[in-house]
Length: 324
Image (cartoon, rainbow, N blue to C red):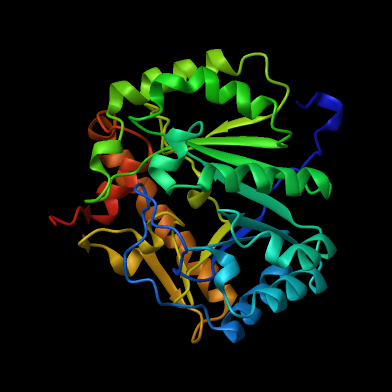
């Protein structure tokens, strides 16, 4: 059990670069948004170029994600480069590679971001047998080494009725922060995806369950549905995404989304960083942000009926589910 004094604080993160190091993963989660072609690895030279230039434009934190980021063959070199550049690494991990790199992770003063899909059997149903036990080991690793960590909880049809139990576990976990979202639909996970009313009900349960929590709780655009304009992190010029193809993308979720078609792919994939400077990327992204907001303004009434805020960008970019 944890208390307010034992929780390590995470400084407020304003300027973030999310890096999809690879789409390789050791798990096959039922709710995964990534495509099944899991063989790609980000070129280290492109990573270095973007990291070094990003510091000039105020990027303070580098979130390493995937896939499972620890499967990148140069993971240790990547952590060293981030710290040498005086930036803070955030490792978004399922935990299975965490202890393998324990020494370099401690030396690099990383922030750890763990994921869970409910308590015990609920979690193992989505993420696979043994994943709950691995989550507990990862939490103990972070606490034992005094590493600040956050937990991302994804609400779905399986766990939506047990939010109270999940909240109790999370508030006693020692996490520095709790992020909560919900499943975004792919052709493989539609049976897990909440509808609009279920999302609204889940948000109300979350507010009630965490009302006495001393740990910061943040709800993501994937579970919220607001009737006004949506300003998620992707619509800010101080949040960036580099995918494993070496391209700067508009959104981390849509960067490798498991859909058959994204009509406006040329807007979603903003810049090939093997050919483009960071300055040129920023100019291009600013133009894409303007197009997205303009679309929301022109289709304001239509946007009110979507299931969550993320759906507004699904519509803009023309994302269509694979029919498999």
